[in-house]
Structures are given as C-alpha cells and as structure tokens.
Length: 144
Ligand SMILES: [Zn+2]
Ligand SMILES: [Zn+2]
Ligand SMILES: [Zn+2]
Image (cartoon, rainbow, N blue to C red; front, side, top):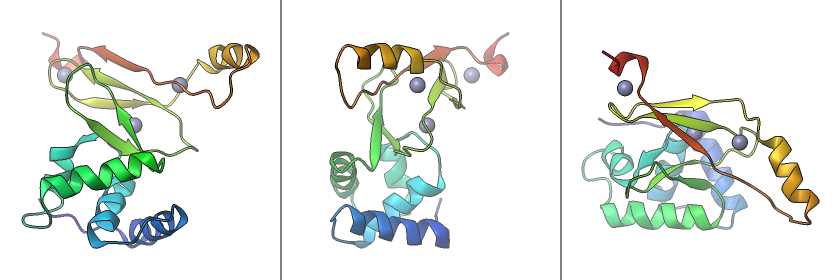
C-alpha cells in the first residue's frame, strides 16, 4: 500500500511542523500528512507499512511519533492491549472510539457527554483538564 498525501495535508503538515518548531524532514512531513489524511488510531507498525516499502525504518517512525506526541500533534490511544496507537490530535474535534473486540474495527463517536464531569473537576481547582475514554464491544457484523 502506497500513500501519497493530499496537497492539503502536505501543506498543513508543513505548517504544523514549523509551528511546533520541529525541523521539516521528509519522514516527519509524510507521517504527519498521513495522519491528517486518515483518521486513526494506527499502530506504529501500521503507519510504517503505509509509508510504502523502503521509505524509512520502523525506528524512525517511532521517533517521529514520540516527537509529535511531545509537541501535542498526536495523541496516544489505549485500547486495552500493549499496542501503541496514535492519531492526530485535533483540538477542534474531541471524540471517542468504540472498538470491536472481535474484528478490531474502530468507530468514531462524535458525541461526548462528559463535559459535565470535566467542569466538576475544574470546579475543584484543576487546570488543563482532559480525559480519554474508549468503549469496547462486539460489533453488529461480528454477532451471530
Ligand atoms: Zn479518533
Ligand atoms: Zn466486529
Ligand atoms: Zn470526551
């Protein structure tokens, strides 16, 4: 599978890298553009594979994602296993996921009713409050 990032994602990745003070390297730009084009989350291996054969080694992908995470460009998602998964952290689009425990399909949930809980936490004097929450279940296709 070979991916050519959309022109929009290419431009945006450049802008984001510069905005975060990261040097614009070919792997960084392509990985970020991929995450802008595709809603994840993706494991590091999946991202590496999507870059196309011989693009860069797996360690480079790990390194790039670690740097992106530190700069708040991507977010790590926990799906109850040991696999690291990342997706682009879009502050304008807070959402959750439901993961099928059988086929591992990931569906995005756009609604979040937890704003109330967050404001309760803020009332206790906390700042920069955030939360993560993922759902697990068996999807309709996987039910007998
Ligand atoms: Zn997501
Ligand atoms: Zn399923
Ligand atoms: Zn939420």
